[in-house]
Image (cartoon, rainbow, N blue to C red; front, side, top):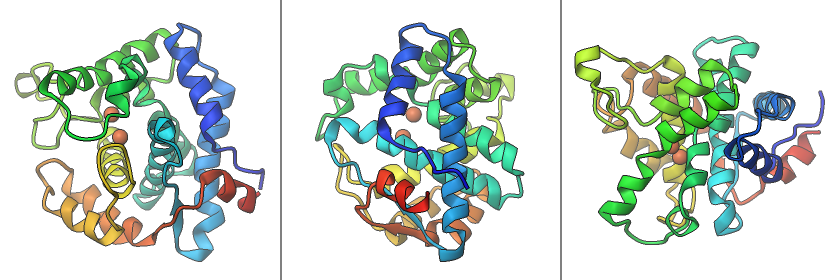
Amino acid sequence: MPAPMLSVEPLVRLWKGIVAGERLDERTLADMARSAADILEAQASSESITLSQAPKVEDYPFVHTLNVAVLSADLAKAIGWDRARQEEVAAAALLMDVGKLLLPQEILTKSGRLSDLEFEAIREHPADGARLLLAARAPDLAVAVAYEHHMRHDGGGYPDPGRASLDWKPAMASALCQIADCFDALRMHSPYHTGKDGVRVASVMRVETGRRFDPVLLDIFLDRISPKIAATRASLAALAAAAG
Ligand SMILES: [Fe+2]
Ligand SMILES: [Fe+2]
């Protein structure tokens, strides 16, 4: 198995290139998506996935994204999607928050409550991300997941392009990445809060079944994936080295 390549630096380069208007670096994205799925295979026998805590505040959005890619690929596998599809989902997860790079650093890494205005700014990142990814000629699935990953199962969330009248349901990949995203955001120590352990996160998320989250996907995630999470401070880079 090739050594997994999941670390912050290539992800930062990827996002910055997209924001600068460059064409997507497909090779780096594919390598990282493959690594996200490789980590699952490497850890399949141990029945546990090690996720990273962000070592530096400015790394938080990127480390979080790497974790979400691993979890999304694992959920895709758990619902029976083949390896190619798992990698497509991981690639979409790696890009879905690229619109956040347009936000001021103070908002991205602010500790404590965000103001209404700051929340409004954050709510722009799905549409901004989709627009940037379209311009960078990213895969269609990545554009869709960027746009839809904060849309709730019950029709709420953002952005809301008139979902009720359009009968707009997010793609399954978007619903799946949303679950992985929320799990890691609650679990990880971040600028916003102190991380919770996996059991506590699972019980918080279960309350939102059928509301925020697709109930079938959430059941599979909470039954089969979240129990495998070993919340340690080991970095993904160290994990990648061990797996390679
Ligand atoms: Fe997001
Ligand atoms: Fe997130």
